[in-house]
Length: 112
Length: 110
Image (cartoon, rainbow over all chains, first blue to last red; front, side):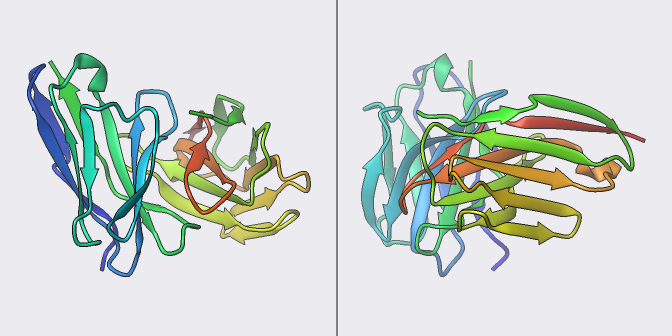
């Protein structure tokens, strides 16, 4: 396993469209995290899963955002009715036991 | 969400110089991590610290977990051009989310 992978790497969409991102964690990692990063800022926590259970959600995660990890392996993050303010880098990270997190390359979203 | 204070915000140094940056928080953390991020890429883990006072090295990088558990610093010795990037600290209280710093942008002049 070469690390956390994310797909797509880049996404351009029009305002109001729905988008979905996928994250494949390191295979033996039971925890998976989603972060959002805007220009000039550090990553901001959105949500995390332990196995298939979503255990914590940030208040940043509005009701237009939903994340799933149905089999405790890969995860998807969906944004409905995208807004220009959703433009950001969406980062996924995984860990075993919640300590050291390893990040994927990110999905850069641009909402026009 | 909470963000940690990193300083300096940016640094311009000559190749071969040593670099020092730090991160402070109003909250106590049990884990500190340091990451490096290149443009358009995800953060890459450099060093992980798990105990107050811990001093850990990774090649030319050395990081310390402050004894108050509210700060951490990262040193880079004998900088080289590929050290260019943005360095982030991240702190964790329990086994859940990490809080990230605002980043230190490093430029190394050959």
